[in-house]
Image (tube, rainbow, N blue to C red; front, side, top):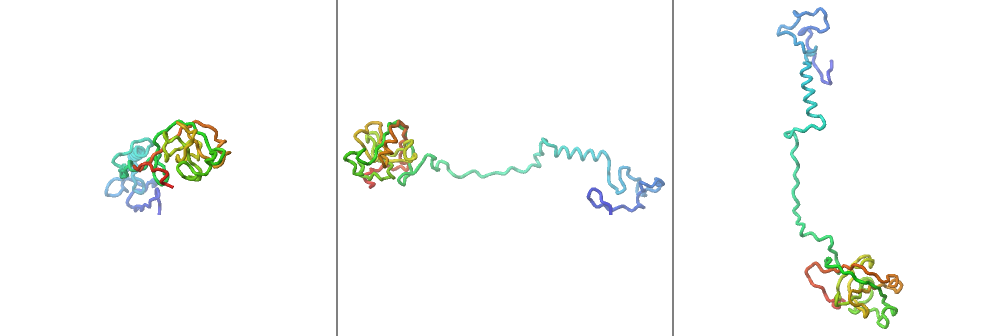
Length: 221
């Protein structure tokens, strides 16, 4: 059985149409229901040039690159439900946690920062290992600060560039030479304190972000 363009075609009865290859075929051999269509092949398929051109133009208009798609045929755009999260309720990326409470930066201050160790070479006869707030020098992993409490009261929270990897450290001590905008940062050993030297840095002062006030560090022992 013959195939045409991948579609099975049922051949017509040879007696119904004139054979196209028979030189002896005449118009009298045409079927009685009407003259043969000059555009039909031996299987009754229409092969007019006009139909082929129309099909080609439709296919080109539908699939040519850059052509505007038919809006009626385009799928409806998908819709995404808006987020119901109130962004105002999300914590600020600058909020940190210290002593189990959220804190945020309050202000910045340029300060001169020196360093000390908890031994007699830095503290003289006050090398008992206890700070002015009666906390041990090992509090917060030896990371704490001495300050002028008129500028930064006890319990103030600071970040000091280059000290304790930028972690927040508390003001828990004071010193006779620490006046005004000066700080003294604690190191476990005298060698580490000497290696710090004297630096002028921009210090960040933090505040609690939970609406509660600062607690006296003497009451936190």
